[in-house]
Amino acid sequence: MTIRLRPATAQDDFEAVAELYLTVWRATYVTQLPAAYLDQLTAATWQPQKRWRQTVLAFEADKIVGVCAFGPARPSTWAGRQEIYSLYVLPAFQRQGVGQRLIQAAIARLAKPMPIMLAVLASNQAARRFYETQGFVAVGTPYCVKLSTKMSLTEQAYQLG
Image (cartoon, rainbow, N blue to C red; front, side, top):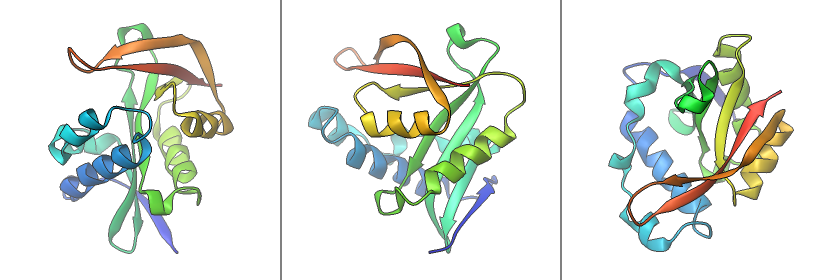
């Protein structure tokens, strides 16, 4: 298996990227989020083309198998910092170094010396261990994020360094 990484371009297949997000969410969160919530998600839930300038893609041959998006931190509490917005790798390509290569590529593209933040579902122990092995440290206590009037998630913030 040969995986190559490159920055996204405006011409990339962002429908395929959105499908990748959907596939990974349904596989990863099947035991962590309500089935009804996962079932109502569609590829249209995500708009990866909006951040193409801040995205690195992983390919096997011509197939997109991973994505990492990053940029200025979105939460006001993280003002003056940067953020890893998302890191998703298709299940068949997980635990093979693809995620590590993607996050390292994103970190390399972010401005120095601003701190880099990310948020992870507090119950996602595998992701938390992964980020910790990449040098991220949990900061603060888990907090609630409302997705809708009926759905909330508990996330944990992490900072590189």
